[in-house]
Image 1 (spheres, rainbow, N blue to C red):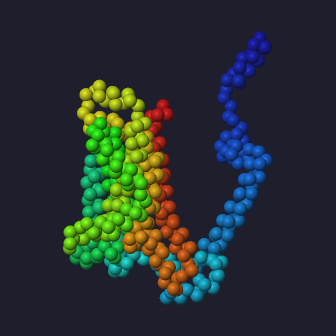
Image 2: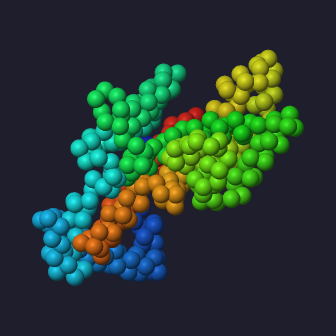
Length: 376
């Protein structure tokens, strides 16, 4: 009887699940598996850790402890006395308005500052799925119209400011937002056109994509700035910013079209046949069945292209438009601030990083949410 009881107790003990050793799970387990799995991995981890800690301590000393944050009346001698042992953030403190707003009139800086806030708010609203309705298009039109009114002025008591005075971060956001917002629907139409059964439409889309992708963006900007005005009627002139914006839209549209086409080709033939079996028209099939699935599959390359073109807006400096990077470069031309470009470039790089990193993290969460059903 006792043997039967002992055997039953042993079976019950075996049936009770036991947690894994702490050295195999959690943060400790991750460290053991990825950083300290063997003597070579341990040696490399310790060596890199030592170098990273030394660099971090040196950077903190340079960027914070020994840094100069402000100087009176452009008296930069305090910065020069550091001789590289500390950062001169005073150049950013002194030139931050120029970096953000360019040569926009000083007393009107509240207008581009409000435009930057409107852009950020528009991005946040567009990222929330509960706002993904038809009304979102009206929100975009209204906000972009308001931004144009604020930047140009000439109404509601605001003085008119020509485009030549615009610059800085607001120009980068204008080029990137208008460019990608208009390039994406163009890309979808071109991608559908390349798969069209009509030879003329297919050939036109192929020529557009191959022609645009075959030349660098700089050449398109040069053509838009220098050659395009030669074909306009005498006395007619199109704003330089608008010409650059059109070039960016055409360039981005060609690259995005290939990304979208890749998503369309990745769908199985059964999706098209099922839609045809339901008796749906071409546009109903494309809008309700094909495109949603195709775009869901290509979220990573789409966002990667968005990030690339957000940074490529800095190329407009070659046609004399003061974007964020160009404004940063120009800010240190003044003799008093020459030699302190690292601080300015770090600041500009941090701004680019914030926007690009936000797009990257949002795309990851959106991809995980939209593809959640695939894991079941």
